[in-house]
Image (cartoon, rainbow, N blue to C red):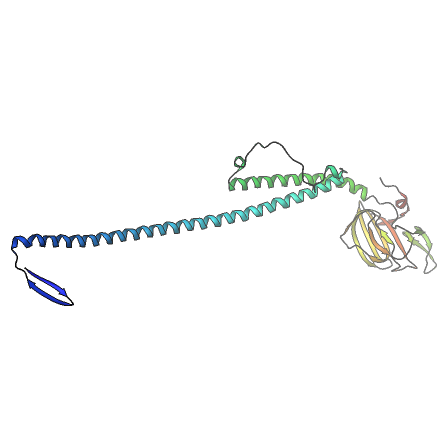
Amino acid sequence: MSLTLIYKGKNVSFKVKMPKAQWLPIAAIFLIATVWFISSSLINNNDTDHVREQLLLAQKEYSDEKQQLMGLKRQAEHQLSALTLKLGEIKGQVNRLDAVASRVATQANIPAEEFNFDLESSVGGPNSETASDVMTSVDGLFSEMEEMLVKLDGQERRMAVLESILMNTHIEEEIFVSGRPIKSGWLSSYFGVRKDPFTSMPAMHKGLDFAGDEDADVVATGAGVVTWADSRFGYGNLVEIDHGDGVVTRYGHNKSLLVSVGDIVTKGQTVGKMGSTGRSTGPHVHYEVLKRGKQIDPLPYVYRKAD
């Protein structure tokens, strides 16, 4: 049998004389060792591939879970934003309802301490439910909030109707024209024929003159809508107020005007400052009352008593 050894980079071959019966077992051992080495290498490679596959699978599962978590996060953020907007809508609705209710309470003369919307209500009672008992789904929560908005809207409408009824009662009182168009001063000229201060000829005076100090307040004798707030020939700076039912009042010769066309004024509100603009000899207010477009004597309105 020939053997080849590598010694210091050199091949050394030599022959060994051995009976065939002795070297066959050795050759078999070498063959078994070679097969074992090759199979071990293959097994190790298979184990490595299996581990690699498991790692790739775990990485994919992690990536999928990460995407799901990101999706859930985006969904939660979207639902939170929607919930915030819905809560803001409900808060606005409640604020409007509180405002209407406060006005109604004022008009109905309800004592403020019994109907105060600025204070939190005092509440209490035994604890009958736990947090888990009242938990609900997001969809259920939105549904309940929608129902609440519908109820609030209905309450606001009913409250507005009540306010309208009360307002009509007060408007009838407010539009009742009465009193003087000034806070201080005196009646200086009456309705009817008089001597014209500029021509000294008889002339029809279609109003009352109330004299006073310059810049004194000129006030509305009834609630209404301003239909004129500007200069007009003969009147100087004029305010005209429509009180409804065909009744109009005029306030002339103002030094300055404090209202504009379209303004809603209340009884006793200052609409101008007394002056002497237009055809005037001194600070005063020329006061007229018109009934269906025709000037009538304002004196009965000045001395009439409010209903």
